[in-house]
Image (cartoon, rainbow, N blue to C red; front, top):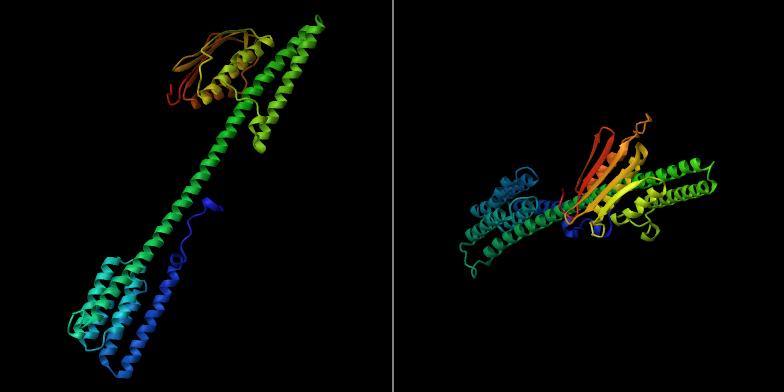
Length: 391
């Protein structure tokens, strides 16, 4: 996944990104310093110098990802051995300082490494000079301070590298999490749109079917009524096409708010009921509290549940439909009751209508139940009227 701008992981400074190269450079410097120590000892013909060079060369070898603590001890012994054998420890304590930098850069504790090297340098130079007095032997203090400084520098660079690596990892994780949330939100929105499409178009198709049925009845006896029924059916088909086009436009590119129909809400229930009555379906209603304000999700769920319940009652029932909606201060109650068909026709459908209504109720924090008592079919939904108060 490509990231740019605010989504990009934090960029490490050059001096932190180059720590691997810095290790190699430090190893090269150490190798050259040890080589110079050997050459000086050979030129002087000093066995003590060769022994001291051998100690620090072994420390360099062990420091290369083998035994860092053993390397630390040998780096500290280098200047001490040189002083004990009477060899000038300047080269050796300088090598020990670079060794401290390398070891802390690779993970050794900065405080431990700094204290060990500083103490060894201080002791070696003081031993060789015969005093630790700053006035008489300033090199001792300089050697100790250099050991502490090099160890602190390596530890600081390692700490910065670890910080930026952790920060980068957390940023990548946050980006991945946000992308997953966005994808999940898109999927949920598409499911919601599909459910809306099912509810609204199912209702419109049911209304069209009723108008066509009425036109068939009126065709022989009342041509004017039949013509009015056909006009109403044509208007219903046009409404289906318009809503389908809006939904498809949203799925393709995302439409502006002005191009979409108003969000269904519980305040539109009277108009919904009149559309069924206009199609010839007798609906007895008892609607109270529609002037109350509901959360958007609950308001939409109320409308869609009633719409789907009336559509199912028209398709699979017979006779009138009793609808009761009570919007109270704490809860919304919906009851839809109708008689089931007894003419033997299969009107079971796919069962997705009830599933959709239950999902609507659950998504709004409520519940929905369907009950059959002989030939009477009833649906009851209870939804919270306020945010954060699931039923």
